[in-house]
Length: 526
Image (cartoon, rainbow, N blue to C red; front, side, top):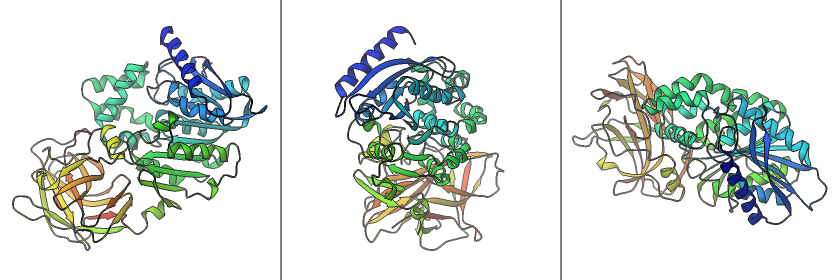
């Protein structure tokens, strides 16, 4: 990054910080903090002034992928005015920070500890009250750093990942839109290291599967789920926040990580897409997720008895301003409704039922690689719209039954709420060794207009053509209301523009329901 860029970011940071001061006084400076290897990191440092002699709790905030340290400026000013030392810095390899982008590798993670070292030496930070927080890339880095640095007592990780393989290669399927977005943004705003350079080379020729598959051997070392035992051993307090429709790091992998944590923990899942739920809060605007984050640090760094200990560990938001509270994730999933998939029937638009019992002995066939109107939408855009009440919508009667299997439930007698992770068990017989399947769960009105609730991909690679395979297929967690008179609809097809497609044209997939393993949809309905 050249010097004019560095100077511009520094000047803008100080200008915005000056305009954003709120209650308590604080100083703000732009610093070049040495990373673990001496590579300078561009940082905005805010220190309380006139709020006592300290020491003050410290919060280190690594910036998101492709964003500079200005990202958290609004929230940082509020934290500093409330008695926190805050260091918001640009992650290694981006903008005004030196080095190369290593995709949350050892260098990037060690930089967090180096920033802590610098803050303890140059600010009145309390060495016994240190937190780490970030959005997206900064969230994953914060968790990885907390696993390696015992000085970090509390973490707030928002829209981050816990398991990179489960995020980038969900059910052996690549989100080409998500990977393309990350690669393009990295090239525009930073200096790719060897791993990202190899990924970029493959993406440039359209080989998204090869790009991700080539990185998978490195994924575990960059995944907080690989060393959750370190957090548990120290009792690190961890708050996790994600969006139901996160197109980069979907919620189920975060939920699995949350379930493994044994120390103080909270999980907040809200409507929206990647980072859209909390980004307004980072800018300093009123925000429920960041309010919870600040209270989390007040409790675990300032040791304030502010009621956090008695709050429900799991909170789900079906719409803005409404939160459903649960003691744990098992309570969310308790009382699943089991719906059997019955035989699709009808000449022009064969449709099966979602019934209260199981049905076996039937078969229904679709063609592979045939476009249909069932779709998950566009990464970031569709989830953002869903978060403001405009979900992905389609017409079920117009879904092409040549390329999609459809099952429709009975009308709901009353308002019902779906909260949790639906799961599908279905037996398929592919005619090809490779096929991608996409399952969509909708709520449909009397006119056949359906709004997407959740979805998930599943790719078979190396299957034996003609041999039945029973899939246990979790859909991503969701929270939605099913008004009286509306129906649940399950659609499965073999093509979605968000994802790569392992299928070739000219093949078929036969759905069936053996008596020993009947095809069923489990839905957390109340």
